Length: 179
Image (cartoon, rainbow, N blue to C red; front, side, top):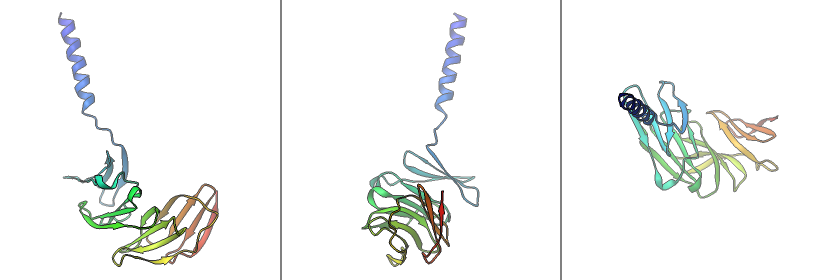
């Protein structure tokens, strides 16, 4: 009987212990202040040393991408609704942008601007979200199916299965990398 009680206690300990582990669906990364960002069940979390902030928007569907290049302007892209939400460092909404065209990729550009890949126009555009329009556009991109876009403040790279197109801050094609 004593052995049975010990076994029951042992199994209940393992059961309780295993339930305390939360699965992190997607670890996004860290900012320069060493705050961690992750997504659980379509909610963005920011874990700082002394607090935990979160942001969720169920009306826009699943988060397609998150750009942390500037932790003061975090960019969330929701492709289901062609929408971008820009958050401050406390995960409060700064801007809510609804695009009319089909947007495949969004990355943070310089101040108040976003690099977007407009699928309908087949162009990369530098979109100013304060004046609500594209200020610069690339030439039409033909015979190329992008699978990913990567960028920083001064350049953007459109990545395909066989090659990568590299553009400068004025959206001039400066390099084609075959892979």
